[in-house]
Amino acid sequence: MTKLTYVLVTHMGHDGPWLLIKALKDVRERRVSIKANKPKHEVPLRLKLLKIIQEPLPLTLRKANAAWVKAYAARDKAYAARDKANAAWVKANATRVKANAAWVKAYAARDKAYAARHKANAAWVKTDAAREKAYAAWVETDATWTKAINSPAGVDFHKQVCGCAWTPKQPDILRQTGGDQSLME
Ligand SMILES: [Zn+2]
Image (tube, rainbow, N blue to C red; front, side, top):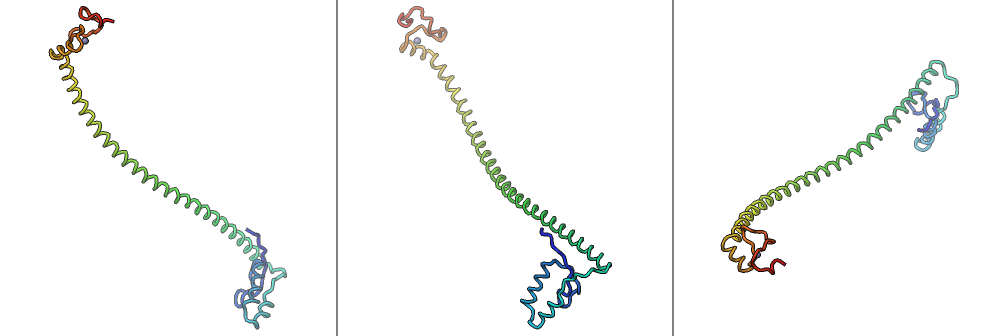
C-alpha cells in the first residue's frame, strides 16, 4: 500500500463540502477531469476555486483534520488486513473444495472396492463349499478304493500282477520271505 499525501482542497465539487481532505493524486485527477469533461465555460471558474490550502488551520480545524488523517490511515490499514484475510480464506476454501472433491471420489472408489470385495467373498464362500463337498465325496470313494484293493479280489489281483510277499496283514514290502528272490534285490 502506497503512502498517500493528504492535502486540504477547496470546492472540489460544484456543490459539495467547501473544504475536503484529499490525496494529492485525487486533486490532480480532478483537475484533469474538469478540463476533459466539464462545459468549456465552467472550466476556468472550477479550476480557480479548486485550490490547495497552504495557510495554517484554526485550532478546531487542525484538531479535526489530524483526527481525520489518523482515522483514515487506520481505516486503510483495517481494509488491507481484511483483504489479506479474505484472500487467505479464498485460498483455503479452494483447497477445501479440491480436498472435498478428492474425498468424494475416494469415497466412491472405496464403495466400489467394498462391493467388489463382497462379491469376491461370496464367490469364495460358494467355491469353498463346493470344494468341501467334493473333498467329502472323494474321501468316501478313497475308502471304497482302499477297501477294494485289500479285498480278496484285490489280493488275488496283486498275486496276478506282482506276486510278492505283500498281504494286507503284512504290508512291509521289504520283508520278502519265500517267494521270488529277484524281488529282494
Ligand atoms: Zn507285491
